[in-house]
Image (cartoon, rainbow, N blue to C red; front, side, top):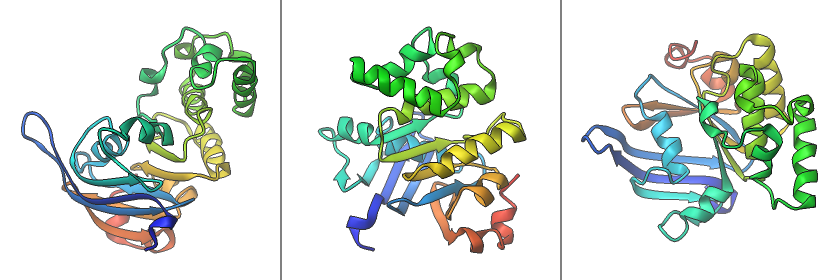
Length: 231
């Protein structure tokens, strides 16, 4: 595959935790620009560990390139700017006591930055919560608020860890609609059949720290081994 078309390139990525537990055992993966790839697998297969390595929060051995930029100590900061990571427990992503100032952290902080923050709050239909503590929002509102705080930075690669976790169908539909409206590359760790069927264009299967299969969405939903991993 032409590297110029790749948003993400991973080669022979290994990672072990400090206690010696294996996390990744030679991951190879390509995500083309603009693709929405679901990363599925059993608990403990390495999905979250992979996302944390891509975002340079963990540092395994091997090659990671984001938008053509190869990961190193010197480029880690720039790669973090190019990526946005939505944690499964989004309450850990909020720092400021009110929503508007939390989102402002991702901007220049000047008048233009404030206008940008207000615009994205409106886009996510959260304007009535601007002065509210994000931790006081409902689960669905909190997910949208955390995603707004990421997107205001204009990342090129969006990493999502179980984005619909703890959401009811109404809020799942709202978030899926937002994700489908975004023209950016996404890697989505999930167990959700809804996410695969309604957001993904490709599915990567993780097993024991490796990518064991990579399929188009239409092919994936016909496979028993894929369906057995989805809820």
